[in-house]
Amino acid sequence: MALTGLPTDTDADIARVAEALAMITPRWNVRILLAISGRALRYSEISGKVSWLNDSQLHPKLRALCDAGLLQRTEHTTRHVTYGHTERGAALLSVLPMIVTWAEEHLETAEHPLPAIEQIEDSLTLLTRKHAAAILWVLKSNDGVSGQALAKIIMPSSHWTNIYPPLRQLVSDGLVTVGGTGQPYRLSVAGEGLGPVFGALSAWAGGQPLTQAARHPLWGRRQAEPTALQWVSNPSRVPTAPTSRPPTRGSETSHPTWQNRDLFSHPAAARPNAALPAGVPRR
Image 1 (tube, helix red, strand yellow):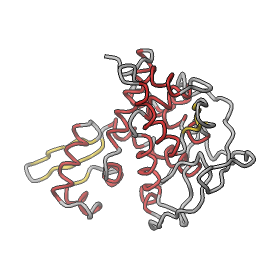
Image 2 (cartoon, helix red, strand yellow; image 1 turned 90 degrees about the vertical axis):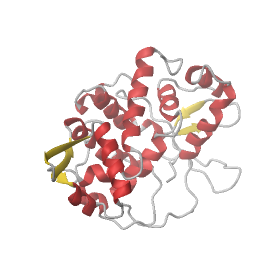
Image 3 (tube, helix red, strand yellow; image 1 turned 180 degrees about the vertical axis):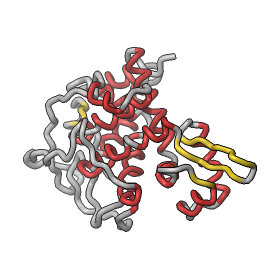
Image 4 (tube, one colour; image 1 turned 180 degrees about the horizontal axis):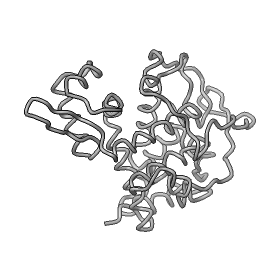
């Protein structure tokens, strides 16, 4: 059954990507998957790597990740059980560097460098907002869409005003921009920058190699980049002169590689409440 008023294949694509995100977004899931990277580990070895989780927390997480097809539980003997990545789970981990690249380019900068794992977790929180994927998909395929038109496409069976809470959240997160009351909604620079991430997730969910991300019918193509506006810190949010986008750190086919230890290489820092440019995703 269609979830939106979008074409069936597009609707299915969005649903698959949302499902992939839902597998890894729950708290600690990414850290557990990364702790097991490499050879299969016994429960005690995994527990030692995520020592902040007690047995009542770790056991259900491992079971859920096995049920999702990302981990495999192997019972060698009754007293020797290991957990390792499935082929699908290992492939999904390759999307994480793309998320880190996007976060480093588009998330507001903390006072001190954050570990890549926190970059990933912050990004996943934004991408799994309710209706976020569908809204971003529609805005990617259109130059500008009104709230009412978005509602008819994304939630045809609901009252059209229900689109505004998720829309306002995406504007606050910096993934969507709007010029003012009655003006159309568009992807921000950060929203456009999600192309490699969504393309890779779509390829993974469809059982294709991640190299197919650049061929995604929507997110694989480049469009004119929206203008990044800088805003002053006051309630009226008056824009100043447009600023140019900083140089891109990567492309759809070239992403950084890092070792698991790199994910935890920076101490967590307090996140400042300083004035920030509009259109910059908030942690």
